Image 1: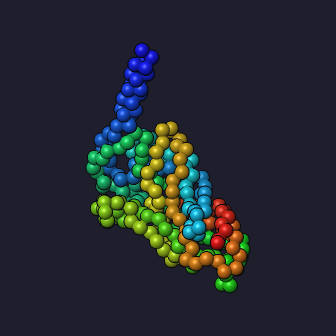
Image 2: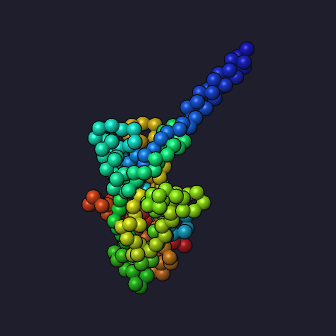
Image 3: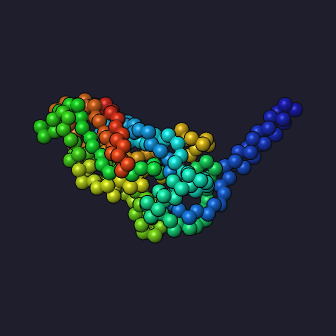
Length: 229
């Protein structure tokens, strides 16, 4: 009897779970469904590939397609800023999942180390000419009339030396989906990675500092220690 009750209970839970996670059809004027604020960045070392990941910490929603009042006005202004006003189609959406981007775009990336990298890059000097920024941007997808550039993926690859980056490369850049079940989501949005084109010839242990400057004048910075083999 107890086993029977347990089986029924599990089936009810499974049924509820399927109902909660069932996708729904929604109509969107703009591809980006919401924008969130940024309160900092976080750097993490990745294995031995000399890669640094850069993340956006989410502080709260600026506005989204379902909002009203000031939040809707803020959302509409950002959609207009990015030319994202004619998506106009029905899509499937999972509960709590949003195509979301930071409410700021970045105009520059800087990277330095506290130790001598090689003869040309002493401690404190820019490493922009040997660090490659790797990410993707959805802006070309929007500019191309919402036509997928390749393999059905709306993101277009960004892979340039930091020294060669221009502000347009950093518009709507990074991971476009966040999942949140609260008004203020506690999630981290992936922004990109920095990969060195060569290993250091002098010091093997470095504390790197990466600084992003946003188009609203805010500056975000963080450090990470990395030891090269």
